[in-house]
Length: 340
Image 1: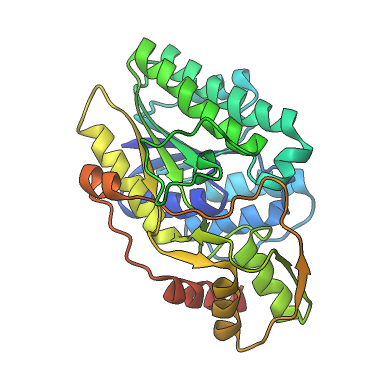
Image 2 (image 1 turned 180 degrees about the horizontal axis):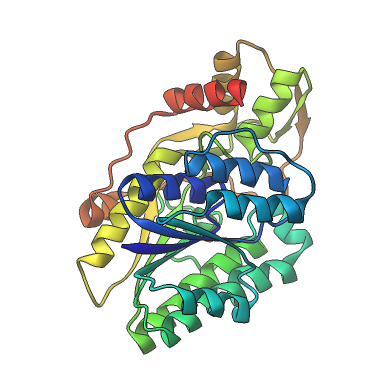
């Protein structure tokens, strides 16, 4: 099978591509190496995902990406430096390949940055997704997986969060764009028979995690002897999900789509283990063997108090079974962090 993966050089995308290639599939990676964080990190992600761990001679962004594309090309893997907002550029990719299924992970991420740049988030997360659905319609590709987010639940008072809960009250532009993607995706399913699964990811962590995310950020600061920003009283909590469990959930979703038709599903992918902020910091301290210095700050606008995934539907429908507990996951992340 040939899969097109958007955002394939990012954290989740690079792990997914690595898994798909190992399972004998062909992959087309579409990524625009956005300046949200250092493009060199994405190049390293890409090299790891295709098992090319040789030293890379970095110079400037455009040259480096061109060299990466040349270095990474193979019979099973092809990479495109492409922004999903550019429909014409995407169309050339669709013309050049026979694509069996699209896995759409590319997005502008982050709750707090979305409050500062809401229009850009709409352009990428909504219009970019619509460009892909339009091309699926035009090229008769009727299997599609889309990354949604636990952020759509907002400050949902019902715990755990189930797919049937009302999600009409997002509290950040990022969450609103993800909810929009679910709604517009259903329109394309209804009008054009595109079988689709929208996966609501719950706080994914592990090796290659983005440096701006809390676990990576705190690990770096503690390791360097700097204080960490500690928002609130430490009781905010997240359902942390280890990267291997997420990629397993995605591949199980692929199998479900390929063996069923007439499908539109929203599925939670969580770890089903809620960890408070204070517990998360303690786990990093233990794994590093270093105590953290905390800078106590007020809660930030757009932050939710708690997330907790009801994964009963994922277990029943696709056979999802997360098996990495948080302490072990943090240990694996810190081991990767110390050798990177």
